[in-house]
Image (cartoon, rainbow over all chains, first blue to last red; front, side, top):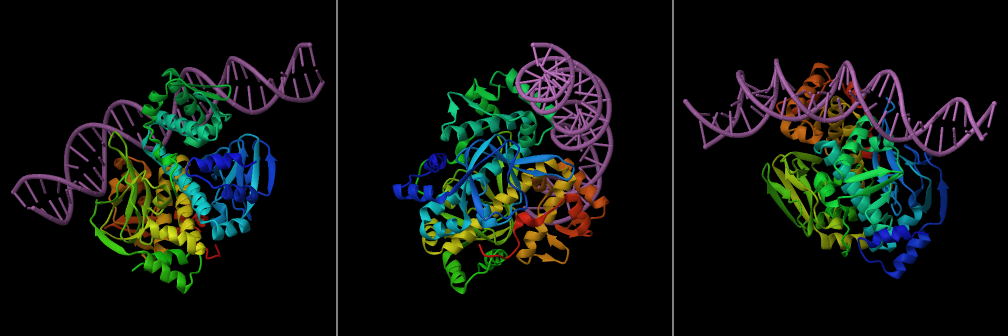
Length: 239
Length: 239
DNA sequence: CGCAGTGTTGAAGCATATCAACTTGGGTGG
DNA sequence: CCACCCAAGTTGATATGCTTCAACACTGCG
């Protein structure tokens, strides 16, 4: 069941069989949620954390004027609110952007894990630290990249992250988000997002139709995005 | 020497005397750095992590066109590159924005700590998770707040964080950054940052002169910023 | 004294938001 | 089964926000 988590962790370090067993025992319940359903409510204090087994979810914040900003995109294998184990109360909500299959790990069990499995603890810690690195990359993109470069950067990032969990086919991957949702990721209006997308299409580097992104010119995409993958920490090394 | 770190951690949870002792033994060397000197170089793989004892530093990224984006501001008590313990290679540089006094903890000692001190490990983990929460708040500010609200939000955040380590006096605090640096935080041009600042001054909510911010109308500032402090996790509770 | 860094101002141009209208496709109820 | 409707994507026009460029004032410092 928790294979995507294991793929995710194995992209950073090796796991012992014992550790894989501990992981599989950690998730006691699972659940399916519908599109647009909240996985975690802003302000709540859940006594468990949520692993995304299948689907795409987003961490988001709604402003007083009703506008929304998405601060993270989660894919299969992401421990979407592991940080709630430390932080207790959720400062953001998490919503299912597609139908999702999720599993839960109780914070009490996670606490025991931190006392008995230091290596797994460090790997869990690592995943939250990589989340932070992705946040920083988004800050850079929002502050100092053109909108076209920002969008290109997002596509690069999603491609590599999806590749780790085996969700890419050649140079394409499924991205079943609406343009409204993408605009909420980039902090743009829908109208402008649409025109930015058309810019990339006209350049011939990618298409995005039928909820599927196809990359025609990966090198050019990297160049437009000024993309450097080190922040994703895809090297396997002892942690 | 490491008092600001202890103040910082104690704003989230209680520490035992033993833990305080472990902490003070963790930092074996210290150093002073000059303004504009790099504390950590982008791309480096330091075998230690750095605690900021005094001064202000910033995590930053320089783009190909020479523009710069600051992704985090560190103050006394911040473990500025603790995440490098997990992540190994630095995806950003860290620069001293004022003269800084720093101390070092070897990653080998941190590894031992994760095997022997699960509670301290969770607290260290917590500080990196709060860093991520701050990053998310910045993403929201960049994407969906007006520039005036963004600046106001930053002032609120810095005030509360500085208060924890005793660096505020009444409703004012020292902020010895240039407008160029502030612009690199907000992802703005200097010219527009200047005008945004004047907007807040004209509203009578704050002044910023002689490298010191003075807040006249805290409630109004909160309102302009749409500020909610939960992401800073300033409540003391068991972690 | 002159020079460099910092803050400030105004003008012109580009980027992005907002508003409004139209298209398309799939799903649904009459 | 068809007509309709609604969500999603697209387009153009206008308004606003932000950048860039250029100039100038002020300060501390060699």
